[in-house]
Image 1 (cartoon, rainbow, N blue to C red):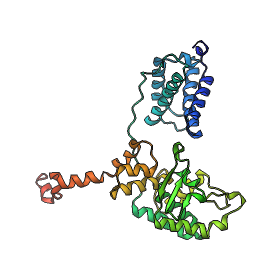
Image 2 (cartoon, rainbow, N blue to C red):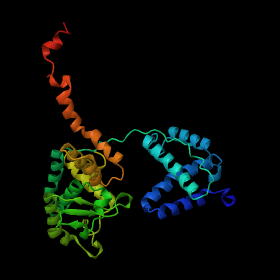
Image 3 (cartoon, rainbow, N blue to C red):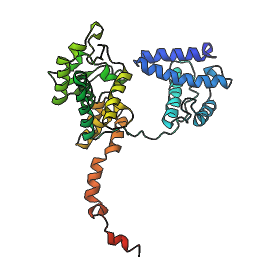
Image 4 (cartoon, helix red, strand yellow):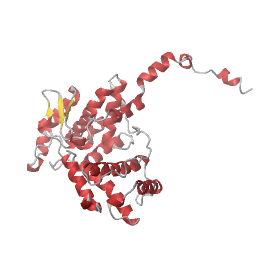
Length: 326
């Protein structure tokens, strides 16, 4: 271990990134991890700590306290609890893996606890009526509106993430099998998702009548292309979906994900099993899918209304209140 006695931040981070890629992590995942770890490095330098070898649990606890009091210079707000947890989690994993790679005899952050963070809640939700209202707003835009309708239908039908739908190719749309192949989704995972007859017909109409009019040499095999025949960039897709939400008088955050969240919630409300939803959404961990159960609670409501004594009685009458107001 003598050669690692004064492991610098740069060398440690490069070794860690190389290990992450060897483990099969995506470029975006490694980039995000490196960004969070670098945040810790900058704090260390300001505190007079210049190498990973000097990091201790006590120092990491000071860092946690710093994060708890930190106010973002951009938003002028404290960090979200989930952000603080992710920053500390990525730091802790860095030391786990560097210890595994034998840069340390023992992990100095082995006992470091993560900050508590509330379970995330899904808030960007549309009712079934709102979904159709948004889609109907595309009618006024003619040919390009047909393309936009196909995009909205695809988001809702497949519950795909913003980037996943943007990078679909001609070969990924399996019209003969009523399926969409989502390649290299989050965490580089690939999955098939069903495609119902109605959205399939919208996608086919776009493919036959609109895409040929927009396509150019730079279109490649990308399925959805913009007004210039180029593959959509992610921010363009957000702007497109947001435009129709606003036109329909609906104001929610995470425009593209509103359709993803709504699709999963509507399926749960109609009796889908949580593990089926996990596969549908491409979640690696069932706990990630559980947030939708907290939104719907459909089965709980049914049981509650059937079994709770208070639910078997109707609302109070005016004379019931009058007795208290005499």
